[in-house]
Amino acid sequence: MDIKVLGPGCPKCQQTEKIVKDAIAESGVVATVEKVTDIMEIAGYGVFGTPAVVIDGQVKSVGKIPKKEEVLVWIK
Image 1: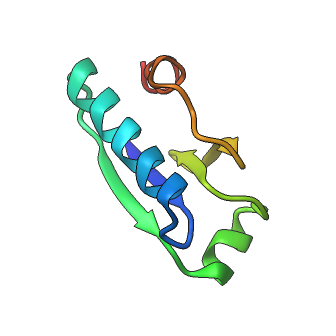
Image 2: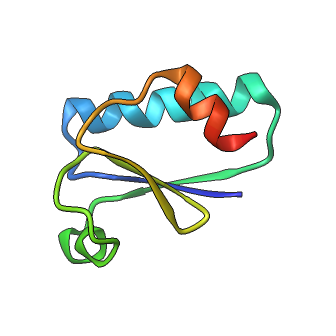
C-alpha cells in the first residue's frame, strides 16, 4: 500500500502524517508513507487544500486532519 500525505509541512500536515503512521502501526498493514511538499505535485492530484491523504492513488481526505478511525477504515 502506498500512502501519501500532501502538504507544505505545516503543523496540521505533520499531525496528519503522525495519525496515518499511528493507524498503520495499529493495523499491522504493510504500507509506505511519503510526505509530498511540492505544490505542483500536490496540484497534480487535483488537491487545492491541505493536508490531504492519498492511498494507492485515490484521494481520501482534503483540507482537514482525519481521525485515526477514518484512516483505519481506509487502509483495511
